[in-house]
Length: 199
Image (cartoon, rainbow, N blue to C red; front, side):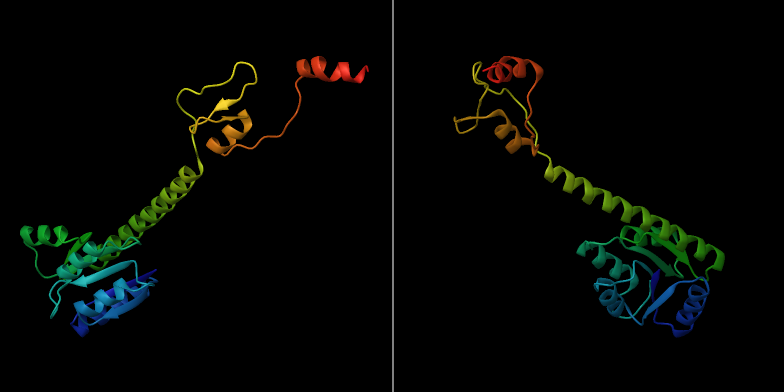
């Protein structure tokens, strides 16, 4: 999985990159918030990002706000990394749209565990999104018959919405997507076909 690191401190960036590479992640880097925003809005954007809160120009929290406002098509998991540790800072970070919050100096094991949580969340979101698309496609294909259907008691044709009479199979086919193969039941065979065969 590709992970974006956005940090204006080159030392912090290199340390994070070393850990992530060791853990098997492909790392993309950004030097500031504006660059991070561009990379996260790109077509092949990383799905998981670790953003430093304090960056020149656009900070990590503002990057979160703009990303969430843009409503990206693919799910994105954002971890904000900062030296701010007060409860009001945590609330602000999470309310901006961050999914998680890690304070500096971070514990390597904790950071790795939080990234793994992000991976699991992204997998679930992706799977859910695929299921929703499948359901929407299925619903688009399904047409339902409902309500009272006027049917002729003699010829069994159905009166449609335009007040025309249609064969049952034509009407059902148009309203349900069903297809028909024609056959003959034993009673009709005896009533209609057998007398013809005896002629």
